[in-house]
Image (cartoon, rainbow, N blue to C red; front, side, top):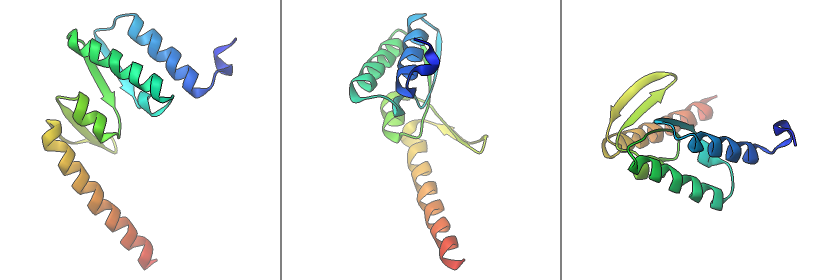
Length: 114
């Protein structure tokens, strides 16, 4: 079957399987764990942990703060393509959460005044 006929979840599974099977030194993952079922996500996380334990570099691009705090030892916060802050998850995640909380209240205030 042609890959174009696969669902987005199946394409993600295939892509992840290929990327991790070639034994890369650096793996860049962009929102991979936002697709697929729980079994796929858990297998993927197990493989990511295994690679990290082998000394591989894994760059995880995600909005999932649980993944950030669980799997990261360094965070780079990007906002509209600009580096907003860097540091440990313990430092950056609370700052990011506060920023998003304030930004959310600013957005709702704007919509009320229109």
